Length: 310
Image (cartoon, rainbow, N blue to C red; front, side, top):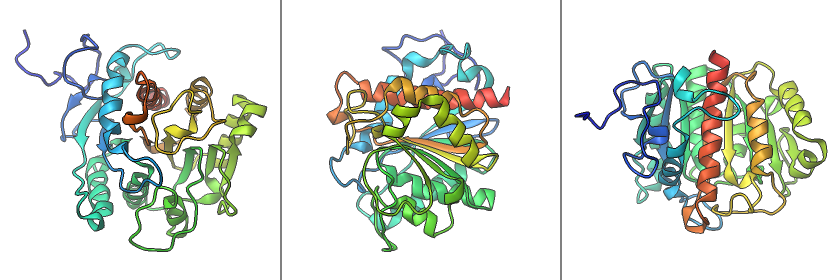
């Protein structure tokens, strides 16, 4: 019988009962030591920036719990992320909800530390505002604006010039205005809420996706992003509420789980340098289907990284 709860190796798939054990993401080792890690997973349990239903602070725990059955070879890849990537789970970022003015720097500092050694960060939200401080850390590291590949029901580019605001609908406005993302290299997928000014980002609305299909989406994404370093952000409300009811601002008419996963699998050619899955709010979920969808989205992101490195 093993004497340690920690996994012995950063790679591989040690079988464990999916209904028992330590609930790290994909059963990876829990550690803040990123030495030798290709990818580090970290939760960012924030929901102070929500505009409708709160509860996304419980998202990271729900995604981890839903990921336990994915510690195996995954369809259609024929491999699991742990076979080709050294993945660790760094737990959750410490966020002081009683001192909102500290939140941006707390998240930025955590991300800065985790990616300093060269590991790719997979963030688990938390509301979508977390992407703004995560982008700050990534742009610091890469020294130039990043492309954004953004799955969402909302553009999140509504105007907001208040320097201290926490708003999960305006952080990409801030990111464009502050030179964190290059709008000419950025694409938003699944949008179905109106915004008069999308700041030059390419918008592939949900209706466009339904009409033109996955292949057309991938062709357009590759044309827009090219080989530019890209940040991948997936708001679970990109999915139709039939597939993801457990979220803060659900909007009917969205993508199916099948459409979203197929699009993600086609992103292997992109140079993805950071990624997150956000806006899971378990209190509104049913049978954990939203958390399951988010766990599969996150696992697909890791498979994309693994396929690119093979």
